[in-house]
Length: 236
Image 1 (tube, helix red, strand yellow):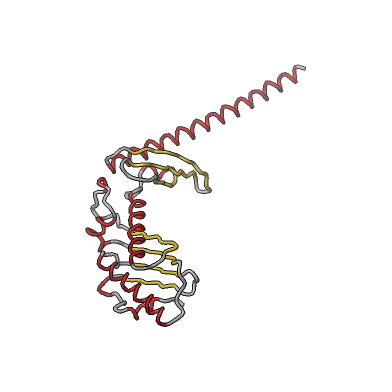
Image 2: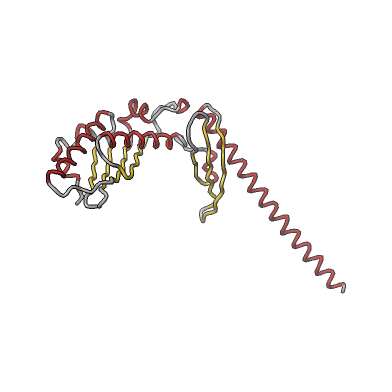
């Protein structure tokens, strides 16, 4: 009987230790999540000079350590923006965190309008500009990608545009030449806007029978001087 009581006491003590450990672990996770929330909010408010609301903090476990996905809203800016990274990365956020997503949306919207204006029927479009970190942009004023391009576009690392069309690739020579003309007009418009520098443009048709892969490093060395030159960009 005495031995049984001792076993019960030991078992109770073990259960108590486990409960304390679980509670401590949960409290530690909560404190860390709150700290991530606070330092994210503080850094973004200092950068953009406006109130920032952290709407969600989600933790994930990986083989390389814990990661967080943090969703934020900026006053005066539409949409929710997500920041992902390992715990330590949140203590020194990337220079273009959030604003890079804003630029991405602005560039994609600009290209969508351009393609539609030029007579293309889009199924999918994505446009992303890689802006170098060593240029003196005042991101506190939330400049648009168009404003940044006007000032520093010649220094952009890349202008990457991926397009899938709703239409099939024409089977006739005449139809194919018309496609070349449309794309050539598109490139001329991009050149006017300063996009045809370090440009990587991929246009794929709905039937997968043709893909244009167009690369322009510099407008001065642009290899496409007339619509027929775009035959060199065809991959099939």
